[in-house]
Amino acid sequence: MFFNRKVLTIALVSSMTFTAGMAQDNKATANQNKRIPDKNIELIVGSWKIQTIMSGKTEVAKNPTSGQWIEFREDGKYVNKATALDSGSYRLNENSSTLYLESVVKPKQEGRNVSEFVIGFEGDLMTMQQREKKSNKKSHTDSMKYIYVRIADGSNHLNN
Image 1 (cartoon, rainbow, N blue to C red):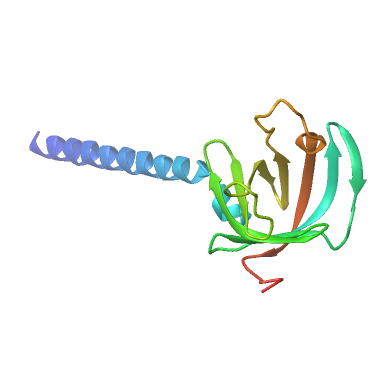
Image 2: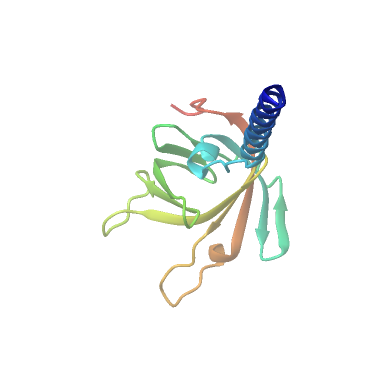
């Protein structure tokens, strides 16, 4: 009788240990399957070349100017080579996916010159669309969507 109890106790403890181990394995697997999305501030750093410009759903230009690029550096600075060279500082609002570019090259007469863009990332592509201005006038640039392709990770200092 004592032997049966001992065998039964050992079997019960082994079963509980095995079940607990399985639960831990399942929990670890579930945590691995839950991929934490990257933050925009981590994704934006690097050099980007313009690929396409869209106006609404119409493609305005594909590979519009091969020399047009923008670089976002880890120190919060950017350099933008579009029709003219621009540079300054940038910041991001992760919750609203809003990028703020404060130009030091094109200062406004009154205060700072800050442009706001809604941004998104998919693979090596970044989309930027300027937020509508609060004035009653709608600019043609408000409806333009700029699609960039990553050409380099990190900070290459394309233009020191």
